[in-house]
Amino acid sequence: MPKTMVPKPDGLSTSSGQGHQPNPLREGIESNRVPEPCTIVFFGASGDLFKRMLIPAIYSLRADDILPINFGLIGFARTAYTNDQFREYCKQAAQQDLGRDAIKEQLWDDLAQRISYITADFDDTSHFEALKTRLEEYEKQFGAGNNRLFYLATPPPVFPKIIEQLKKAGLDPASNPNGWTRIIVEKPFGTDLASARALQTEVEKVFSESQVYRIDHYLGKETVQDIMALRFANTIFEPIWSRNYIQSVQITSAETLGVEARGAYYDNAGALRDMIQNHVLNLLALVAMEPPASSDADAIRNEKYKVFSAIEPPAHEHVFDMSVRGQYGPGTIGGEQVSGYRSEPDVSRTSNTETYAAVKLYINSWRWAGVPFFLRSGKRLARKVSEIAIMFNPIPHRLFGEKSDTIEQNVLVIKIQPDEGVSIRFNAKVPGPKNHIRGVTMDFNYGTGFGVQSAPAYERLLSDAMRGDATLFTRWDAVQRAWEIVMPILDVWQSIKDRSFPNYSAGSEGPEAAHSLNPGWRTL
Ligand code: BG6
Image (cartoon, rainbow, N blue to C red):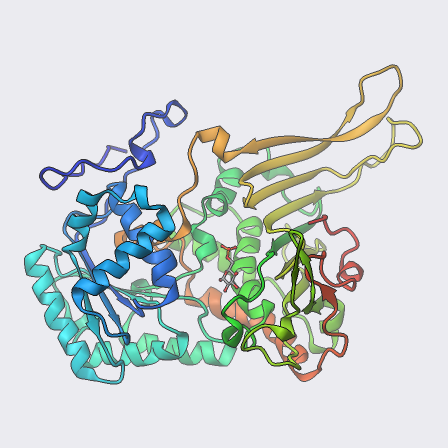
């Protein structure tokens, strides 16, 4: 692939973005993928997501020469800011996330003059008309080519209103024939199957599927993208990637954090909705999918959808055999005493919301028939770790090892975070005159393997949406099917209160009952 040349504005030298350091470990690897000129409008720009993730990602994209030179950014939210106040707010947010020294004044000044803000009431169409005028000004001033990316970073209940107002104000794709119009929709896409369908109905009134980018930030993580490379850029794994060699698959996304300031949202969501329905099921799809016909977005998304459609949602009467829920009580994390979920701000003192969910699913296909996929996610657990463990069949016949030795099962672990890499657990002879056997680990680590740190997921996702590459975004059919898979569990959990809550201590491995679902969980 030819290297894309990026013209720089006069007098601007780029930052010390890691792409610019000579790095022998990445020699010959192309990394610049510059999108077309465009303007991004961030709805909800005064909110937490914009501040913590989005504006730092925009600055990093600029510093790494990935942002188009003809670029504009408009914040649109309720909080009253002047343009200058908003620019300062953005700068402080970027400094807070990236470090004061990481922000280069010249680069920031170039970016800042392309940033403006509209204090808005989402119910008032005239504010969307003002946005249209501002976009047209931007397109002249910055040559942003009539290309518009709308990012819905507001609380989800506002999504339908914004979409409706875009249409009323003439900001829909059909009214912009000279450029592209795309919309990024933050998670959660609905709170259950019915509300997801209702939201999709609103989206479809204005946008076609190819213009909609549904975010699941896990798909933007470098290590998650590597799952497909591991499987399909190597020959050694695929022949054993089936029920013939694999006993089970464990997918874990554990956090040590509690609900922080998000009690009001979380108490209506819970771990199944917040993590399993989206992030964890997406990991499952990447592990279980068939090789796609090409690396094209839809070829990949077709295969992911096929995995979901081959999963049978648990019957209502089997929900308690196929799932375990938990809620944390007080406990100790990192030597600090932390309170129980029901004492968190904005959480009901009698809450029945699960902060831990474990689910067993089967994929009804030739490749996976009979292989259990164990999924678990929870807050306030012993360790922050996201990983996929492929557990291989035990040896068929014991030949080596002293009587007292345990011959471990082979395990391939795809480490998503905070460690990033792949490891294989296998058995080896312990040096010495005796025939002792012990499990050992072979480890690949991204940081040392490539000499770079992975870019945050939002950088990749923003640049892909600007470039029109939907591979890492979830398609409606998959979102709908993922809801169908979890709905019976949600229904049963909602209708039957769990009287054992809280049933695990903060800082522990989760509820005891999870071991009856899968006695072989890897220790956190
Ligand atoms: C979000 C959930 O989607 O993912 C949060 O709403 C969760 O509750 C977060 O903490 C986890 O993301 P990460 O990237 O830290 O694993």
